[in-house]
Image (spheres, rainbow, N blue to C red):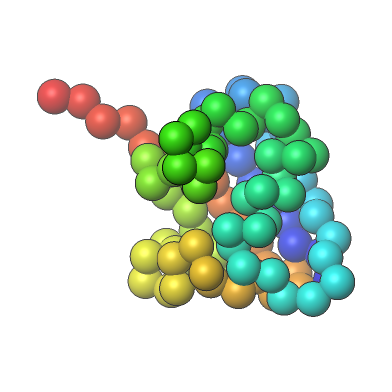
Length: 94
């Protein structure tokens, strides 16, 4: 199965790519997709993974086929063949 990962804004700059195609044997939780991305593109680790928890950060917007993952099943959302996952950085200010 192949999924497409797209990067927006600073994630595009950090990764040096607009998108990435990843192959998996079967449906995979989003959490594992992110871990695989970091192995393929280690420069993304600091932007995507919380250093203390070693889990994906919550300071980004992740869309699966156009739906924000919080309305799906969060990091446990199952990613299937031909799904599109988009990572969008979120800026906070005050």
